[in-house]
Image 1 (cartoon, rainbow, N blue to C red):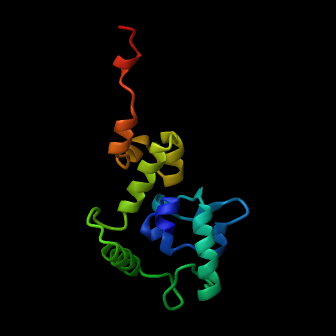
Image 2: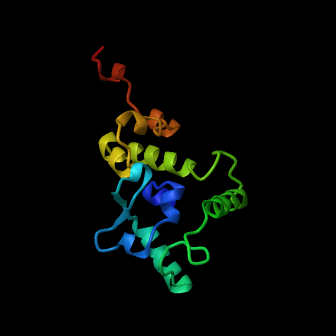
Image 3: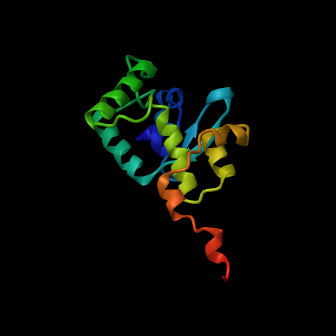
Length: 152
């Protein structure tokens, strides 16, 4: 949920600390993401609710998702994703990074502009963000042909 909900890279999600979840602002702070850049992304209410339940159960200290006194290993996060994907019977997608592509595509489908998506994903260039954007069948089906606007 955290990877998809905020459009995070797996390396970013395993390095989250509890204070990076800014519930008052409904934002996730990513510190030293790829390219050693800091940024903010969105914190969905449904994710916040799940993180609060997780907090009560696991009581994380230094790292939100942790191993033994260190961040959860990336391989563990990927294994959790693959296990959930297999249990759900999902065959599409190659790995946890697929969730980042879905995040960008679904924001675009909602009408979010590409510049905002670029900022949330932590990209320096729009061309990088454009590689994450895929057109869904639903989006294509909802487009009105310019022919329908002509008075013939």
